[in-house]
Structure formats: structure tokens, C-alpha cells
Length: 170
Image (tube, rainbow, N blue to C red):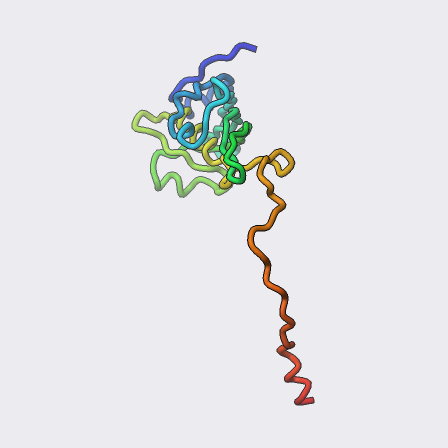
């Protein structure tokens, strides 16, 4: 399969009328916000986007994207490879008013002044959202002693039952 370079911006309305399917790659090095959070392990991001019109007449962009990146484990501070995979479904809107009319099962993406969507930024934002909040290895792959406990746990003191006082009233 040939890796075609995807367009940076695309008109979703025209693409949906033609039922266009775009499959190709974006350069990972162009995604500076994503690379601020992780390191590149692959040259490209694999992207597949399908444009369609749903039964309500709304333009719909749905697709997938994946990229291999390196994250820093928060337990041991060592780097590890992570495959970021995302599925998305968007419906473009011209403005806030039009965005409110889009059903909640679609995410909304705003069109620019030319009626286009920046496909690369859209994919980049979705990949950023897939980065774990606290990146870490699987427990068996981590070099940190994750099962250890730091400090000592206090001895459990037997507490009186708060309902014992009710027995006196009986």
C-alpha cells in the first residue's frame, strides 16, 4: 500500500458530496504540540478519514489515526514506546449557532473562513487527548520497585462502634 500525503486542509462539504475516503500519512515532525508532550518513534501518522452525509443531511467526518511515540514512565523515569490510536466522528459547523444544532453524538469542528477544516490540527488534537494522564509501563515491564511501600503504615486502632450508644436506649 502506498502512503499518500494527506492534505493539510480539506473542504468537508464538497468531500462528503463525493463520499470521499482519504487514507494516507501526515508528518509527525509537523505536529509540534504533540511532540512537546512526547518523542517521535515513527516518521508518520497513519490517518484514514471518510466523508459522508447522514440521514439528517449533516456532513460527517469519521476516521482513525495512529502514531508510535515515546513517553516517559512516571514510576521509573525511563522512556517507553506507546501506540496512540484514536477513532473520531465530527460534524463541521460554520459558527456557534450552527454548532448548537448538531446532535450530541457528533463532536463539532469549526470551519475556517474558507469553509475548510485543518485536518492535520484535528488529528494532532485527537492524538494529544489519547496520551495517558500519568504515562507508565505495565507493572511487569517497569524497572521501579512498584510493589514497595515507602514509610510505615500506622497500626490499626480499634474504634468504638458509634451505634453502641443506641443499645443503651433499648
